[in-house]
Length: 291
Image (tube, rainbow, N blue to C red; front, side):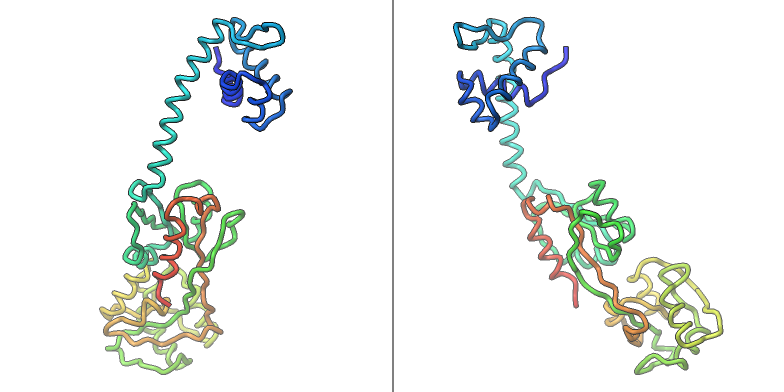
């Protein structure tokens, strides 16, 4: 036989504990006719009558008492388990949060967030963040792409502007970017974040450079590009934050009217705000990324 739905079981137990239709309906926050309907539907799941009338009073049959005892014992254990689950969910040591985004950004956050539970950092492309959140693969996402946000919450996180990082040994130091500087760089090995760098193409078009750039290495990780530039393997375009403290590298800032700043966002599901420690992690994330 099939088990009754939980709503019917709850109505049955409420009635048998209250011994009164009105009190049971009030406890369940439903009407008395609705409770009567629930009890009638509940009884249809069993091969014998669960209730009998003694005068105008609805009481349990002997079989009904056995049904009540069975469900009561099961629900008593369930209540105990739920209480234990609630206690564990409030203890930070038992909480596990997953944060997803570009690996370089996660590396910055890993040392900036102090949480007594577990933090798992999940490297992922920015384009895949929103979908992953909706599929509950992680709890917090970092992205600049809001095209798939839907009903997710999006909070401004940080912005990146861009600079050119040039090995100091090349002696192409410049106070600002110009046609002359870019023309020199185009002949030299370029370290790219993507197979076709949109940022490089923007500069080539702006300064009307006719030569084709020499792509030497394509690595989708800013920290690795920074390391290669420091080792004089090539020049690159990267967020200023990753370029400013490099050794053996000269930095040329790119005006934001040429390559605009990129706004990153923190994405999460609204329900996550109720989880213990979640708001504190969001605050530490905001403080953990340098200006």
